[in-house]
Length: 267
Image 1 (cartoon, rainbow, N blue to C red):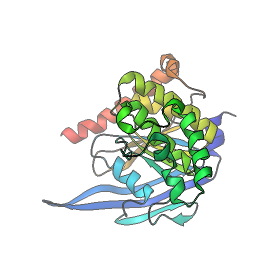
Image 2 (cartoon, rainbow, N blue to C red):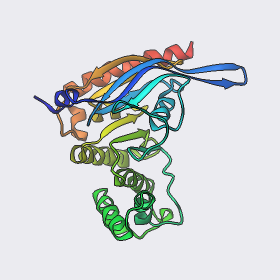
Image 3 (cartoon, one colour):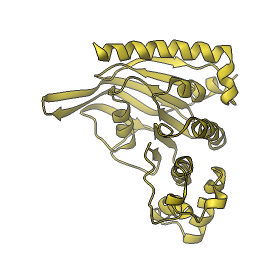
Image 4 (cartoon, rainbow, N blue to C red):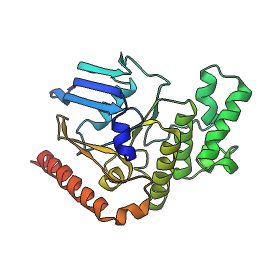
């Protein structure tokens, strides 16, 4: 049995049921999410794609506990998500590093907040700094790092607090193609080693097919789950995977569905 199917036999980690989210705008109510239901399994890698404004980031913010739903329920391990928690690490497109702290200090910050002893926190943080290939930059400040290196720090910081779920909102969206490709492969290796549940938002269909076990396609606003597609490509995957016929078939299939939703926005 391949890894994808094994993961889908795992328990449900996050359960979303009949989720609705509305905001008040200048011209009245804006419905961002409507009747969204979704199961995310333990150790699963899920990517979410859809046209701009379909509620992807709003959904992630609700899973992170940063936003509250207008109605519906969101649970993790059977318990309602009521706010942020170290059990759910979040990585955004913008790195949000402390500019006055070094790489190692940024990564150990969450550990120190948890009350972990300084020496223990430093040792644990260094493990993740090394994991993302930044051992030689541990004492560097963010201003001394490239964009890709800063994002590696953000990922290391999220992993260091040992979250059960990693929520990633277009973390590679602002990077050049070469750096993005390298970080995609780094993330896949780390996910296979650490076995976290990953919920990853992207506009890039190629990226979604490379990373995900399942891809959630969101509809144009109001955001709904239009379709969920299993990606039956074995791991490990790398950039060479993009040359395979099955990869190309999945990419074309999903792109056509996402483009259809984009056209709905443009009408």
